[in-house]
Amino acid sequence: MFESCHPEILGLKIKIIMILHETVVKLGDNSGARRAKTIGFIGSFFPKKATIGNFIIVAIQHRRVKRRFITKNIYLAIIVAIKKNYKRLPGFFIRFASNKVVLLSEHGKVVGSRIYGPIANELKKFKITKMLNLAKSIL
Image (tube, rainbow, N blue to C red; front, side, top):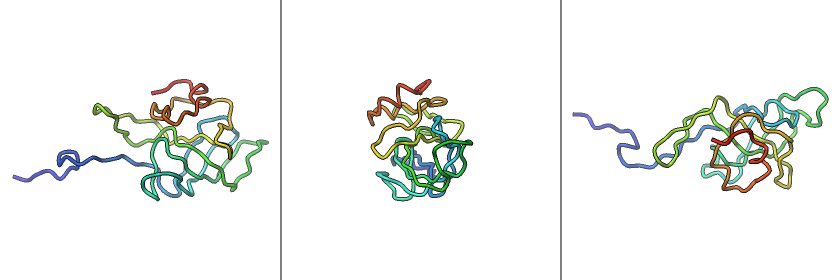
């Protein structure tokens, strides 16, 4: 009787997006910060949303004691994991336990020397080889 209005049934492509403006994210490296708030987006398709692999601008909210990052300062980061189900090509979904980002320097290099937990496979196309080498596992 009733037709379903789900976008996939109607044949529309959907892109799953999770990180919004002012989302608090965890940092997945040992750079010294623990939590950061998203304040801007660079190179995302939507100007106010981001997904895995997008570059974002963050402000440090909480840091570990005696580290070089100052709270409320602005830094560049890349999203490596999101909580929302992320659709892959053959119809599989991947989901992480938390929203994680990795801090980058102003030249685009990874700041930390270790990355905690798994990161998404979609980051290979950005060719940040140091980040891929530091990760424990790539899903």
